Length: 275
Length: 176
Image 1 (spheres, rainbow over the protein chains, first blue to last red):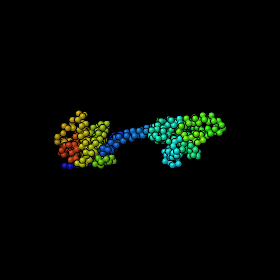
Image 2: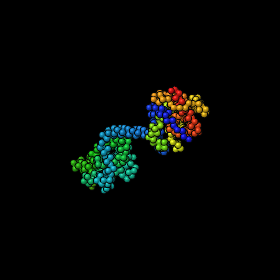
Image 3: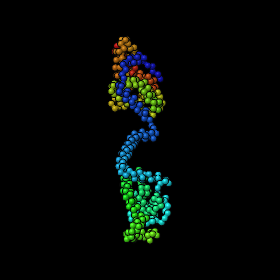
Image 4: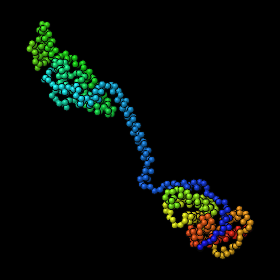
């Protein structure tokens, strides 16, 4: 079934001016075709990523930015708090922070390594008073005050101090209480064994550590004042004074001093010349 | 169209560039109004776009797209109350009554006048006959393809085309 074209009519028809669709129609159609051509069905994961990728990225950015800002802010405020504390108690803080390193060093002048040579001699006056407050030598170190309380608590090793003094002073009996810096520092360390670990922690901990360090400094000062007094009242010195009084003919005073001495040190074995 | 169905937007653009003017002219000559023609034209191409995945090669793309155009025109005629397209079929007697002969000699020389005459006569044709003529001129489809695109038998399509041509030639001769 063929119907020949009327070529003459076709030529006249083709001569007609060809109308064209508007440009916007062309643009609309082509844009729509390209849009849907790019929107081919994708795996569920890709669709999910496309749908939620941008919101998730925005949320993650906000969270990370907020966290970083918070960290920077906390760090800055923490440095502000730490700085005055470090200035206030500079030396004790150093002692406290250096404690873990020194703990294993043999050259550390720790009373714990000194061997007692004699039975513990009687301690005079100030040292004796302090001994009443502190623990007895035989008691366990665990029974001492809890560390980090901020109060000065003499270490259990305190009665061994006279041995150290005797060694340093040439075998002379020195029952004075431990008062030197080298002895008190280990005591401080023993009081605050957790301070070095707590120091890098939050600001509150650092503040309490600083308070503890301040209290330790005060205790050190008190010890320094007590040292000469305690040394003056050693039994040997006292007996020496009594001998002097005897030599000078002050027998009454010598007797009174001796009686006083016996009262104070009833267990002390008197030399032959003073019996 | 298959390439476009696989996501090749460039393939669609090629199809569009090739068929846009004939299709637009076909629609414009049928409805006689540029705005309506553009609306139908855009709607037609959007149907093509949306059919990209369901498209199957059963015939030439040209037959398929003109079939869409025909269906879209039918919808438009129905919506606008033009029922003549479906009911108007002429008998052979009408065809026999048309004067035969050559196109007037002056019109052969004056192409512009001839074009105006032809377009005026085309606009006066019944919708089905005009459609058959336009499909032959614009799409260069065969009678069978015109019949398939318009959903009629081959004989009906051939008859419509014969009437259209006879009337157009008569209009060109008569005026001379």
